[in-house]
Image 1 (cartoon, one colour):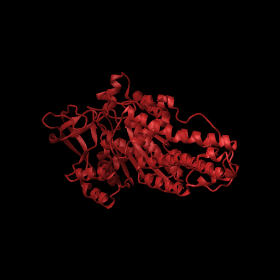
Image 2: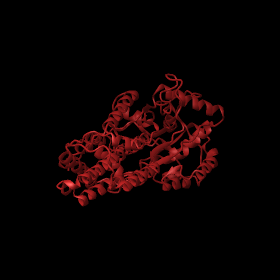
Image 3: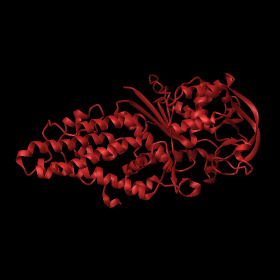
Image 4: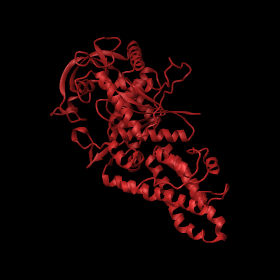
Length: 503
């Protein structure tokens, strides 16, 4: 089986999971589940970034040690992902011993190779974003360009990575691989950033200012910059499990896909690849940078009080409805505005199109055929079914998840139109139409079988329920669709998949 390694960002553990975290993770989970359906051996990594200034400050506010807060937050993220049905294979924490060892080994190697040097830094620093800014970037008001908080002027010794040395090499990689970053708008943003000289990157903080981090191996008075620390967690986590417990297990790096929000694209598409180049490691094969969820055309943020809690939505509508809305309503790579009205519209789509198709089909088979169908039947709409399967996989391979879900739902709509045109209830009254009624009902079951496969990456719980209801022994993969369809058992009528009383 071909391996496929994909990652979410390693989420900063100073705050609770919100809709932005949920979208990124559900998107990555959907792509992971899709890859499993194609026959790949998937390794899906997520986790928590647990060092840095914000973690120390958040722990101090709660009157607890940073490690205790990190433990609690990691547990919280794992719980949220369990509630949202996230099928990760590895949850990495940057406080793990294996990760600390890897970061220190990497820093030592870079130091010995002359890729890191010591220098004095003077300039503007944002504690919240944990990064330095130039005078031009903070302006006369001395405001962080990212979080819009005040910055402070500091002077201190730092260690720097010679990032600027790799600017031309990175540009060549991007030009040679025009689909390395998707969508194209994000690629162009990175190219625009690289149009100016690329400075070197501060990769340490003095312990006199911050002692919660991985100690720099060649200077006990400094800790590693949290972003450098977190980025290398993708490499630490690429070994499932680690070599100490299973020496025969190969490392999955490089990642086939790294999914990030557009606000951390520069970190992942500039800092990260140059660090990998200097370390002699291959670059990730592809980076998908998605957009933001907005509220009233403004980015959701805790400080503005407009963050939506996906777990609260889940309590009312169900996990799969939340997953469906987030991926169906956001064009992959673009921004989208959350409204409760749009959520209800997408839920109605599930209830009225897919749910209605399931209820009508299973009820008719139970009524007209006592839940049974002949073993072999020629089905209609075969060309449309094959076309949908081909286009769905094409869109998913191109990471256009919203388009893939749209054409899958279009097939359900066609099936509802097919019922309206064929009028199975009329065919059932004519004994001479018995064979054709079998064909109509088998066509509908064939379509539902295909839809369990197409919708299962985004709605795994509901599609498992549907598979059992239409007599399938398991959720079909793309390879065994025909086999699972031909060996089905009896069809059962059940409760609505998407109850309308939730609206």
